[in-house]
Length: 193
Image: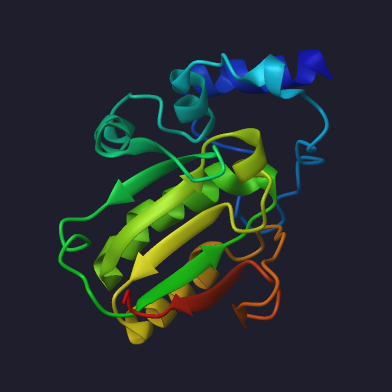
């Protein structure tokens, strides 16, 4: 197991472009996702942020350098970590917030994040966040995209369903599922009072 994950990590840092979750017709699935009890917190708390960025395809080479530079690592109230991209319109937004939950199998997260960052800004994305520690990477809602308008969120969701066709899904319970497989769903937060 160590050897397999070491090879995968080295392929990421070496600039490998393909992942095991190819969306090409007939491509197979690469195996099981990382499980929640594989590592203890003491084993992962000192991993460098560059390892996280590399595992998500944001290794600082070429196009990914600007994406990595635009992201910020944030800690939530429970101590979990998120990698966030906040657009310029987010600070001024005061209305309801519509969210897309993109819930791929953990082994496909790199490809799903790339599809979100490539496609969702054209649909009015206000912000995006992805889990940045084992707890948040293994959650069903590991990748969340924020929009000001429901129509924009749903249009982006339809585009992601096309872009991620065939990708294995985990699914987020208690959300408005799009497409029938659990990969993309939506929800809303009421306006702040």
